[in-house]
Image 1: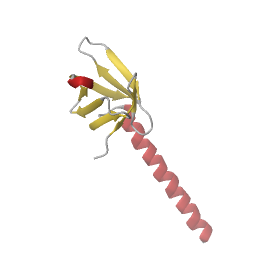
Image 2: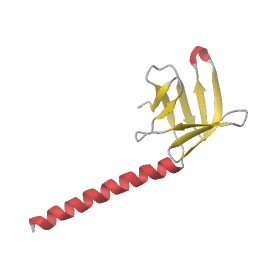
Image 3: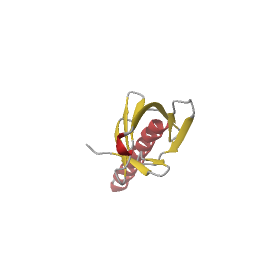
Image 4: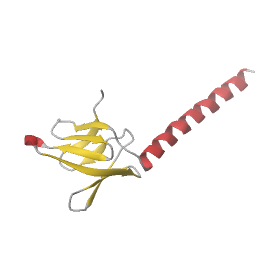
Length: 107
């Protein structure tokens, strides 16, 4: 009897882990980001809302551009039509050249 309870607990744990990884995979394959992301130094700030990202740079400069998320990559479309791709990690953070790792600000 104890063995069947342990087996059942293991199966539930495996199922829970599978569902958690599946939900992350689906979010990483296509979706939207929401909220504010900053780098470790606080130098750069990206705010995501409604399919657009507001990028605030040092000295008060800012710009807004459309973005998508696909296959664990953040893709930002520049005003000239080029698309820049930034890899995302398991925590949902992404890498920006010069600024480094950008992670969501906890509210």
